[in-house]
Length: 68
Image 1 (cartoon, rainbow, N blue to C red):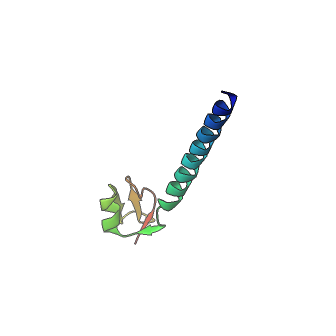
Image 2 (image 1 turned 90 degrees about the vertical axis):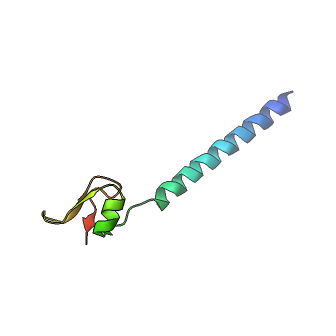
């Protein structure tokens, strides 16, 4: 009986550790580029502010990224 509890705890710990590593890899893979095109800004749900200082994307996935 005691071995089953230990085994269950080991399995649960391994599963939670695997989920943590998967989340970290996903967050790294989804980083936004530093410069986007106006069409990429629009596709991400933003508005390219090319007439304002800095030419940045406002809103959406690429919010704050420079538009080239």
